[in-house]
Every structure is written in C-alpha cells, then in structure tokens.
Image (cartoon, one colour):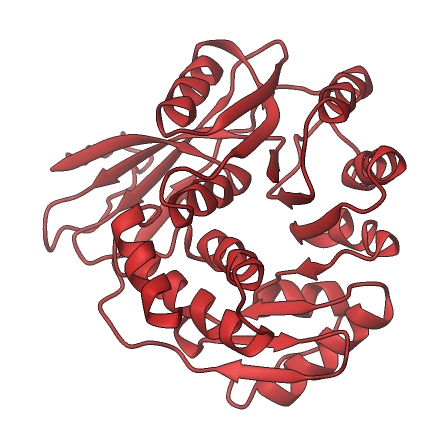
Length: 317
C-alpha cells in the first residue's frame, strides 16, 4: 500500500490570461490589472500529486493514503478535494491556514508562480504525525516537496528514523531538495528524483547542458555513494536518466508535443516509475513508461486523468 507525505500542501489557484497577453506587473505609479479568461482551483503539493497518479493508474481503485498537515478553511478544502478524488486522508490539523499558491500563465504560455508560506509546524506536530503513521498500513512511503518554513532541514530524516523503527522494510521514495534530501541519504532510500538543476545543487557539480549525460551519470553516482539506491533524473524536454544501484544507466529521450504546463510532470514521473516496477516492468521499461506519463502531464493541465494514464499503461503492458 502506498503512503505519501505532503507537509506543506496548498490550494493551487490556476489563472490563464487571454491569448497573446503578457502578465503586467505594477510600477511605482500604481498597480497593474490583469484579467483572466480561465481559472480553477486544485489541491496542490507534490505528495498529493503523487497520490493522485498512483490512484488513477490503479484505475481509481488503488488504496492510496495521503498524509501531512492541514490548517484552516483552506486545509479543509484540500481534504474535501482529495477525498472526493478517492484518496484516504490522514492529515494532522495545525493552527493557521494552508497556503494558497497562484499559478499564472500568460497568453504566450509563460508561467509565473507565487507560492504562499503556509502554517507554522512544530516538533510536537511531527510527533503527532509519526503517531498517525504508526497506525497506517503501508509498504512504500513517498516524501515529496518542501518543508514548512518553521521546521529544520532534518525534519524528513527525523520522520524516516521513526518510520524505519516501526516499519523497517518500508521502501522510501524521495523527491525533495537541498539539505532536506541530503540528510535522508543515510536511510538508503530506494529512489530519489532530482531534476538537472537540483542534481547540480545537491552535488556541487556543473552539468554541461549541451552534452549532459556523462555529467549527470557522475553526479548521480556521487549520490549513490552517499546512500541513494537508485537515482532518477528528470530532464524535461530531454527525457529522463536513471542510474541504478547495480551500476546500470539508461537514458530515454524526450517526447515531442505541445507543452501546456510542466506543473506536476515530475510528480507524475516518480509515481508512475514506482507503479511500473510494481506491475512487472524492469528498470528500463519503467523509465520509458514514467517518461511517457510525464509527457502526458506536460501536454495538458494538472495531473493527467485516469483515462490518459491507463492508455499509456496499456502501451507498456
């Protein structure tokens, strides 16, 4: 059973400007007014996105639990949305309000994000979350996204120490950045999924964007030596790269198409990669499958629906 953690979820407010119109910012003379032609709200956060992909790949019948923190009326709306989508919710309530993230796309396809900070979370809240996880049935734990601003960068490692104490066979999947990820490598996660920019920041290595594959392999190997078992690197339009714990490395090229939005594509990739492995695909095929699912996410808005994901799955079954 899958469990995802989203410690800093959000309500994502998507706004589209008219075709050809650029986003205008204010000046010292006064504010600028932009008018949208389309808007919608979704439950946001990388762990929630991962949970939705897993649930939809399971033909909307897979039991996937989403956990984390929620606060205020926006937190209640996050829970309402994900439960309506069929997820099991085990979020812990904290004071304040769950953040709202503005995702604006102008009429030329240029994306701008303004992300809220979210509520303050303390050590006692982490203890309450761990107590909830102890009562949750799971064999795979996805930890995704940013930490609440009030927590130290080792908060994920603290959670993993506790989880592996009561569930030592749990398979750990990490998709987070910086010190939050580095502090977790000692727990030997089954998979980490940085993008090229994050990989360079994690390792201090320069990635040659004109011919990146050798650089990516060396950087990924550095993270494996620090404890990661497998490293999946998303490369956007250039596809994806995988270095396994047995030393195999694969690259699958990008899939051409009209990119509508890249938001959620990386979450789609990491979720579909694990789902592919769990449903009989070898590492190379799982890489190709996850790359295809991520492309479908980029060619649309938001997380792909079950019909789209299951169509891709049939191609690889």
